[in-house]
Length: 373
Image (cartoon, rainbow, N blue to C red):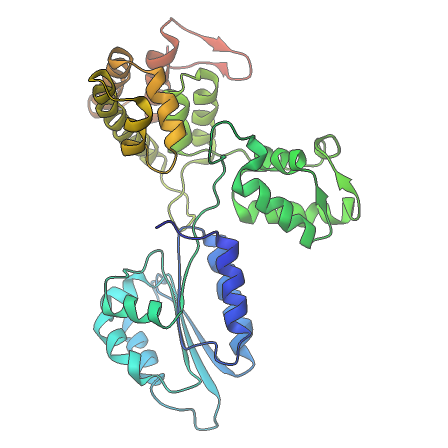
């Protein structure tokens, strides 16, 4: 089951913290770092007045992992002066792996008033600790906001990130039209931290006014990024300009890991290639079923995942021959990466041109001179 809307999870945490019994166990998880940080701030603010907060970063090289064991054991003992203790373990994957058994043993022995907060990318709900946290109502998962509409026929302004931005703007005294909110996302990007920062900058300029795209054109900070998913989608849609624009953004901004840290430039080609290979495999299998008499809609429902309509659109666009051409371009690109030592970004540009342009050296308005050919 998909995780709920991250804002709803944050609201659920607010409600729980406002109750008389907020709980003792909290697991803050999910790929969206900004929402996780918001949740951690709420926990700090709720319990800071009651006693001591021990804030431990599990990835800090100078932090001794043995210290964590002592901190965990300390939650089993009351404070001499009656204050509470909260242990907050940020980026706690390594800590959980090292002290997993101690976490389980601790569950039934935390002194009333003390709290344990674990911040991880993903907590395994099959483990004894994961099950206990979920049973206690302390598991909060913050996924990324979707930056595209759920269905192809819906307007771009209906995307989850756009609607969330408009709601967030209202809490800051700004009234964005749906078109203005979409314009902000298109220019600034879909990272909540960047979007909120832009709203904070715009608030004193437009407070109390209804804002459309026209008023924002000279005010926004441009920060266009992209992902391997957007590049592959453009490839499968046959959109050469979108594919090259995405590649340019990947070259400039790079890819980021689940914690929001920028990956090395060498990771771009393998991640794009891996996702393209997965998509081509699913489309090829679905195309074989359609050619065998199945309907595109039925095949898409089995292989398209959450974005079934988008998958069906791509399935209808491609026959076996066009999918084979894309696959051959991918194989050539991977072979060149292993044997030539060329810049991976240039290899991706060449892959795009071979898959979509099917012509010699090309120049597109707004993209500059292409370097691969």
